[in-house]
Amino acid sequence: MIEDIRIYQSYFSAVVIPLIVIAIPLYGMFKRVSVYESFVEGAKEGFKVGVMIIPYLVAIFVAINMFRASGAMTAMEDFLRPALTMIGFPPEVLPMAIMRPLTGGGSAGVVADLAQEHGMSSIITRMAATMFGSTETTFYILAVYFGAVNIKKTRHALPAGLIADVLAIFLSVYIVRLWFG
Amino acid sequence: MLNYIWAGLIIISVVFALWQDGTDFKDHRFRNGEALTVQIDGLPPGYADQLDPDPVDVTVKIDPTDYLSFFDPTGTQGLAGDSEESANVQAELQAFFSQPLPATLLTTAGGRELQLAVPDALPAPLDVIYDATKNDNDLLPTYMDGWIQNDAHPSQATASIKFGHTGFVNVKVVTETMFKQAGNAVTFAIGLMGVIALWMGLMKIAEDAGLIAVFVKIVRPVLGPLFPQIPKDHPALGLIAVNLAANMLALGNAATPLGIKAMESLQELNKEKDTATDSMVMLLAMNTASVQLLPPVTLIAIMGLAATELFIPIFLVTLVSLGVAITSAKLLGKMKTFKKTDPMRPNNPNAQKGGDA
Image (cartoon, rainbow over all chains, first blue to last red; front, side, top):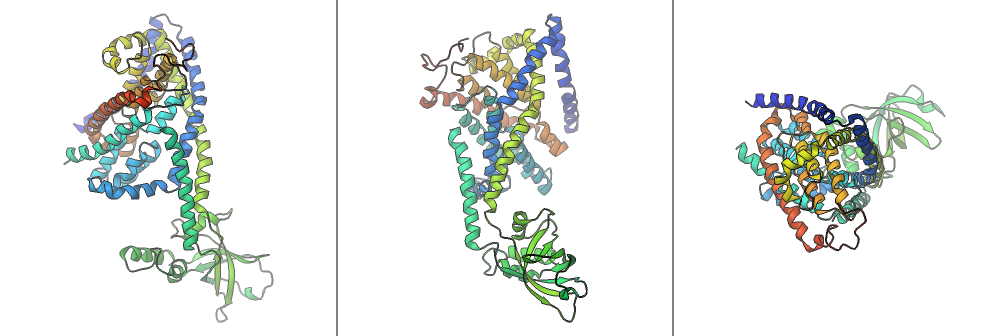
């Protein structure tokens, strides 16, 4: 059953994008749109957006990676560990919880490390992987999505995103524990 | 809030690094200026009598006990001691120094210099000293402080060596990271351009063909109440739906360009172009906590088959966190501080021309 899901999923991923890519121009031609002209017109934006997000990405990448490199992130983990352990949060997945909203690549690395150390089907790896799968790199999304349209004043976007992140991280621990007994 | 977090990250990083470096100085952690005794072997015959000898290849043996008492004479740095941890450290040191290290012995204007070729996974704190002082050939330079030729075995000598001066290591790493990541951000953004262009081109076709308008009609009943600021037939809602769908199906590299496209559409309605509207915040919150029908591709790449078992837990977690993201975006938006900065508020004095839909 699980094996079937995996196969269907890989088939699905393989065909869904090509299908979208042919469906859109096909529908466009059916509606008598000059598809090539429209495509190029729209694609021009890609370049603008790419340049536009640079300052925002520099700000976010620099701040977050300085924080990691200085060792302050590890110190923060040490600081939070006793309190979190008390409420049933395994200390091994703490690096994941802290890194997830900050960096996508870094948190993927944590999952890989834990999988290697504890095995794929250990509860620790499953918790970390569920955290990875169920939250997004909030700071990066914020920089890219708002950077692309030059939004500097983000208002309540970060608190809202972080509240959802924190909840998802705790929920991952408890749901995985329930689900896998 | 982002202002404080951003500045906080940078300030904490530098202060923390400086504090650690200060502690290293205070503890005299790298023994700057002090000499460690080592055994040198493999000297060519008559080496001691030469006035200006050529560089020679030798081997260097460091006694683990000497190493310990050199770097941690008081046993306060966790290296020496009776605990299980320090027993492990001592066993590792024994293993590491059981083999002599290859080295080059040369004579410079400043005296004899011994350049050690060291393997990876150096014991602390030599690893830090190595990173801070290694030369262009990735050798660890050390400077001769004393030299006793072994008369019985002319190929051997006892020497005391000093390591290169090591300090402000953490601050240097933080500074390097800062410059490296600034460059990295640019490379990353340029790498994204192609994919963004591709999806934006396709979406433009979909828009011109009226496909987005069809989408708007379908998703209006569900998404409409979440985005009350979007006028009835505006394409923004359709683009938001496409972005959320891409997220749910774990089409990671399509989701970002589509989200940007949706943001651009929302920006058309924005009356104050540098400030996020409630709709924008809602879209961002929904994206950071998006429902995953399929586990993300990265996770499958890391975990393979094991990732599929997490399919249902991930779905459940994202479902709840999506609910929370929507609720907190709505509730926070009602708070006084955020409400008074809403670009769409009536009589906004900063409203720009052309912001009206």
